[in-house]
Amino acid sequence: MEWSDLRRRWRAWTINVNPPLLLMILYAVMAGLGAALLKLPFAATQAITWSDALFTAVSAITVTGLVVVDTGSAYTPFGQGVVAALIQLGGLGLMTFAVLILSALGQTVGMVQRVVLRDDLNRTAVHDLLRLVRIIFLVVIVCEVIGAAILATVFVPEFGWSHGLWTAVFHSVSAFNNAGFSLYGDSLTAWQGNAVVNIVIPLMFIIGGLGYGVVSDVVSGIGWRRFSLHSKLMLVGTAVLIPLSVLGFALLEWDNPGTLGGLESLSDRLWVAWFQGVTTRTAGFNTTDIGAMEDATALMFILLMIVGGGSTSTAGGIKVTTAIVLLLATIAFFRRRHRIHAFGRSIELDQVFKVMALTTTAILFVTFGTFLLLLGHDGQFLDVAFEVASAFGTVGLSRGATGELDGFGRAVIMVIMFFGRVGPLTLGFFLATRVASRVRYPEGQVYLG
Image (cartoon, rainbow, N blue to C red; front, top):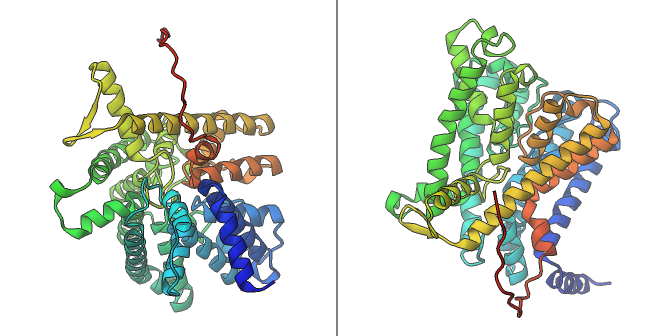
C-alpha cells in the first residue's frame, strides 16, 4: 500500500471520528510508545516492569508527576530524556505539536485537525488557532531556555557541567509544563532555602499554569481594559489563590516539626511556605515532607488540586475560571439574579451548565476513584483521597500511597491521570447527542433544598 493511500484512509477515518475520542487515542498511543521506550534495556538502570514503565509514561504525557520508581535513579539519561520528551509533548499538547510540524513542512492544516486542536486547547472556536499555536511555541521555548539558563547557575557549580546542565534543562521543562517530575527522590527539598530555585521554578509553573491565552494578553501590552474576560478572571483568581494558599500553609504548618516547625531558619520557613503554597494547584514539586503535613493542610491541598490552574495551560483540575464562574453563579442565585456579570460582561447560561457538568464530573471521578482504591488498599482515607485528587488535578504531590499500590490501584490512578489531562468533559462530548429536541414538555415543579 502506497503512502498516499495511507494518508487518504487516515483522513477518511479522522473525518468520521469524534474529535475528543481522536484526542484520547493520540494520548493513549503516545503513552504506549513512551512505555515501550522506557522498557528498552538501555533506558533503565534497574529491572523495571511493564507496569512501572506504563505508569511513568502516563504520568509524564499527562504532566502529572506521580511516580512508582525514582526517575533519577531508576532511569538512565536516555530514559530521563524519554520522560522529558513525553512531558514536553503532553504540556505543549499533541495536536499543537502536530500542527507545528505540519506548518513547518508547508502542509495545510485542515478543518479536522483544527477541530481536534480546538478540543486539545480547550477552546470554543476554530478561528485564530494557528496564531495561538505560534504564541504557545514561542512562549514555551523562551521560558524554558531562560529558566534552564538561570537554574544552571545553581546546578552546574554543584554537579558539574554535564549533569548540572541536564538537571537544569529537565527541571525547567518539568516546571514550565507543571509536571512535577524531579531527578531526585525528595524532589527539590535539598534546595528549600535556595532563592534562585524558589523563585525560578514557581515563576515558570505559574506562567505555564496561567494559560497561553492569558500570557498572550499580558505580553501584548494591550492593557487591562482590553484583556479578555477569561484573562481577567484568571489573573484575579490566581492573585487571590496564591496568597491564600501560601498563608494557609504557613498558618497550618508553622509549628509542625515534620514540615515548617522543623526548620531553624526563618527564611527557610518562609521559602518553604511560599514554594509549597504556590506549587499545590498545578506543579507537584515539593521542598518539604508532604506525608508529614497536618490533616487540615492535606484537605486544603486536595481542594486546591481539584481547582487546578488555567484553561489552555499545562495545568490540570477543573480550572480556576470554572471555580470562579461556579462561585458567581451561586452568588447570583442568592441575589435572585437571572444573569451573571463580571467585569462588564455577561456569562451565558450554557457556560454555567458546562461549569456544573465539569464540577459534577470531577466530584464523581475523585469520589469513585477514592472508593475503588480503598477497596484494595489498607492506607488511610485521607492519604488515598489525596493521591486521587493529585492524579485528577495532574499535580503529582504524594503522601506515599502511590508507591504502595498494586496493579489494580495503579490502573485506577492511570485512568484518573488520563482523564484529568484529556478533560472530564471529553467523555461527555463523546457520548452527547448534538440533535436538538423537537419535543417540548410542560414545566414541572421540583422541590430542592
